[in-house]
Length: 131
Length: 131
DNA sequence: TTGACATGTTCTATATAAAGAACTACACTT
DNA sequence: AAGTGTAGTTCTTTATATAGAACATGTCAA
Image (tube, rainbow over all chains, first blue to last red; front, side, top):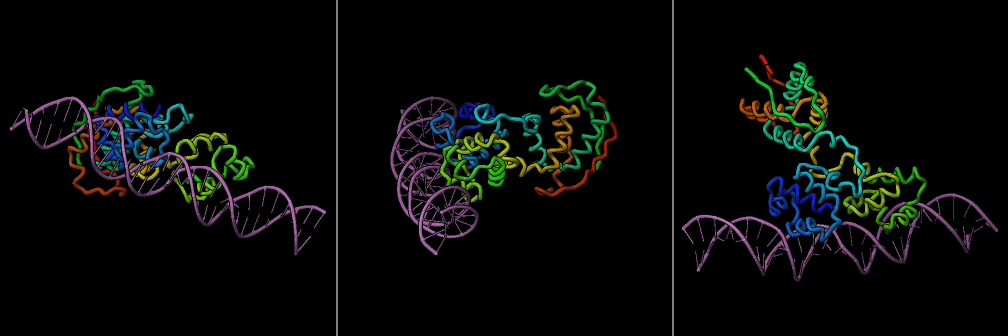
């Protein structure tokens, strides 16, 4: 059910109900109701705001209940989303990232056979950056 | 917008507003409002019922407004998304990216005062990468 | 202990989603 | 034309989603 998913993600991020409610701009009482499925018919806008601040999307929150899902978001796991958002916040431009990405590719990152969903730690060693 | 998608699918199926409203169990007045975006914040249950009787799913109806208002897309523009998707396809791990990102930050990227939405090209020069 | 601060809950009030008319306009009949 | 039917819209009301308290409970420091 949707309530459990929200609660689980919220706790995983270390947010209290109050914190998430403030971030998402919904009342904490309502969020409490939703998590316990006391009220299980939120509007799109409410659900979207909650999903955003949990670094996820509505499809995930809805689960299989209502929406068969085949979206690009499925490819980009949640960690990517949150990392990328941080990077943007920190002022990284798309050009910067593209340059780094191309570089990575040129060094045959793919050789290691990364499978979707599998995570690995970095093996980058950068000797110098100048700008 | 969601209204246009519903209307388009409805007409493609040859349904009148009244017909679809009856099938889906919502009032035709409300359906009319939704199609014209007079009211654009329906509940999950209403949207699910409409989607079902249009042989589609909520995802499609939501389209790129998967997260209306404060969506990921507002912060991470389209270019970011496509770049990131490419990177993942190419086998770049989140750990790799995180390392690059931290590096960028340590080099005071932010100093240049990037404002949200503004784009700039890369000024990275990487002398060497080893792995 | 005390009290100040978090946590999540349950009240009650209000805003708004949604229903159920009545209404307009158009197309066919006869 | 006058009637009949069906389309979609705009009224007005009702239901309920959501907000904003007040409330309870726990924790931790002074």
